Image (tube, rainbow, N blue to C red):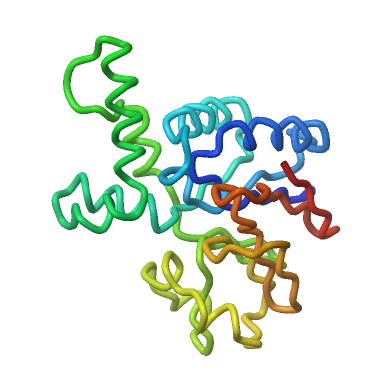
Length: 215
């Protein structure tokens, strides 16, 4: 297995994603290396539709790509399923839906605002991804619980209890969800959400070298 390139929360920051991916693709060996996205592709930022469209095209050209689910993708699904509309709208979802409506109208499509290909992408997202040395997850893991007994709610939503923990999960956990000014690097975890949507940088970590790229 080659190197792993993991990218933190994008939140509709398409320009930063495009800039970062130029560097990542220059560094990657597409036949050997793996690219992992940690979720939260949408909401709050200006170009969620463009981000998802880019990721779908990227998946078609790079088979060694893993897309994890973030809590914002879960909120979107709950909104679409009619389970909880309020939570999604007040957490940046309104901007995403407005973007999809604008694209539908510009394309002259009928039906719902979100294209079928995008809906299929959201449904295909995984809760976690593991290698011999790493566990990749959106938010983190519950301390004291073996990795194979973790529940999706924690993997998508947990924050302080995980971030403050020195629990050894047996592998280093690479996560997003909780924004830091600079990446958090500890023996048991690496946090790479650096708040791109809040005016900071979008981050990629290259493993096992623990080298960071920013845009």
